[in-house]
Image (cartoon, rainbow, N blue to C red; front, top):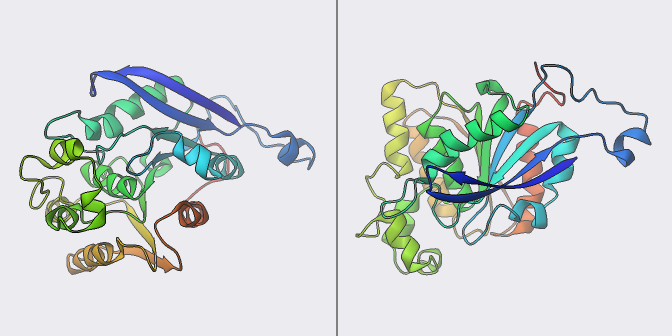
Length: 274
C-alpha cells in the first residue's frame, strides 16, 4: 500500500492543512506470495474513496496509529483520505475556519487532482468516529448529491443536546476556545444549521436523495442516549438509519473492530472502477 503524508495550503482554512492518504498497491505478503495479482493502475481506472474523520483531540494520524485502516484499505482496494480537523466538529466555525467547506469541497478537489480517485457519487463515502461521526453526517447532509453512504462510529449526533447540558463530561472537556468557536457565543448548536435535526429535516423537506446512513455505538458509550434520540427523530421523518449496538465503550477497541463492519456495509467493488 502507499501511505502519503501531505501538507498543502487551504484557502478555506487560510492555513496549511494536513492530510493522510492511503492508496492500495500490491503487497508482497498478501499478493505475490499468495499468487493474487490485482489489476491496479489500469488506464483510466479509479479508486473508490472513503473520507475518514478523526474524533476530538485527534488528527489525521489517529486512524493510522490506533487502528488497522491501512490493511483494511488494501484488502478492499479502497482509497482512504484522512484529514486533520482539529476540534472543529468539521463545521464552518462561528469564530474560526471553514472546515465544512474544506472537507466537502476543497479537499475532494485537491485529492482528485493528485490521485486516481473516482468523483462519482456511487464511489464516494464518508465516515468518522465520535466528533468525526457527527462530521460525517454533517458533510453528507450538506452535500447529499456527493456521497453514496455516510457512517458514524460512536458519533455525537446530537451535539446541541451535549452543549446544552454543561454537566455532561464530554461538554465540560471540550476546550473552551473551541466551544465558542464552534458553537457561538451562547455555546449552543440548537436550531442552527449545524444541528443535525435541523439539517436533516431541511433535506427531507427538499425531497433530497439522501445517502445511505449507518450508526454504530457501544452499549456503555456515554453518547448512546443522544444518538438513539437522533435515530428516533430520523425515523419520525421517514429516514432509515441502519443501527448496530454492541458491547463496548467510547474507545479504539470499539472503533477498530467496527470500522470493519462499516467496510462490509459499504457497496465496495474490491477492485478499481472505471
